[in-house]
Amino acid sequence: FSYQGKNNTDVYLCAGCRTKINTEVEAKTKNPNRAGAVGLGILASVVGGVIWYFITLLTKREFGYVAIGLGYLVGLGVHLGSGKKYGRQLQVIALFLTLVTIFVAEYFIFNYFVNDYIQLGSKFLTQQR
Image (cartoon, rainbow, N blue to C red):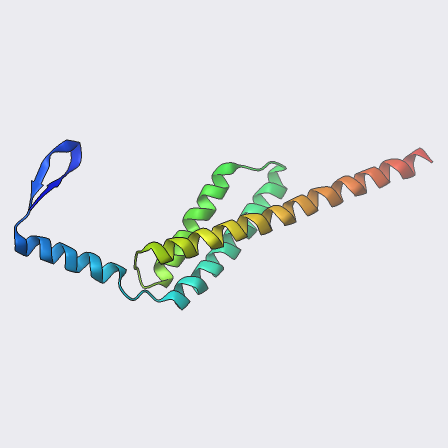
């Protein structure tokens, strides 16, 4: 069997090697622990969201790199929670949890800055009287 490898070079496998590789790939994707993936993914997303929130509050700026780190952290949590499995279902779980975490963290960040702005405005108004 011939496959295209790195740098467009051909890789040749015998039938036994191909079967062994296919068996290993199937073992890494078959029967993931979905409950563990969701549980550890939620834990990772909460931790990542809190970290993002406090970084934004401390620096008064949002950094997009933190969102990338959040996605990595959630993906790692889903991967470890699934029993170190791979697959499309786990990718969808990690994507969903990451997006929910980004929206929730953005809500809290926005809420904080709006309240801060309102308090600043009320202090300014009381000083004018």
